[in-house]
Image 1: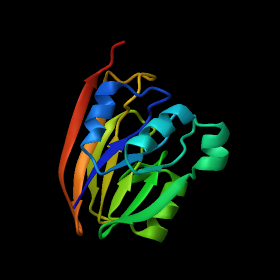
Image 2: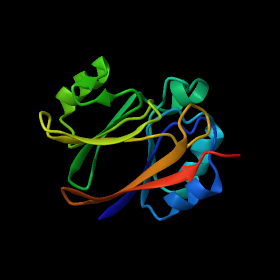
Image 3: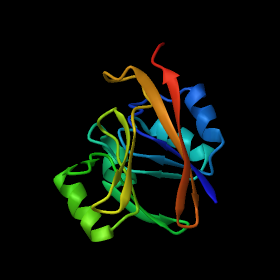
Length: 166
């Protein structure tokens, strides 16, 4: 069994409360708009990190260190991670192409700054957008998702909320 911390849209901001929420996890997955190599390095120093670049990431994050999509298996669960993904029946074009090709059981994306967890019955996968863990954007609450993967099961999903204040 693995405990996974899922975050997105840090936009260069990573504070102690978010780091503490991720400290209980075995792995961290970041769905893009990391914002700085410093944030990436802090996360990578904490736990094994899987990450993709977001539309606001540039420089080394975008062109050297990260890819637009990451497809991998966590235990027995095929996972697709990207930044701009959309939602069931409203997937971004490139994301939909990857979903059809890879057939993930868990699809993780960011970009909207809106926390949303929804099961896609048509594609037989759980869609997870952890919202935004950073301060930039119009979201009112910062969020992180934690979940467990045990074999082929995704379980014990929880939302951790943080105030958006300085």
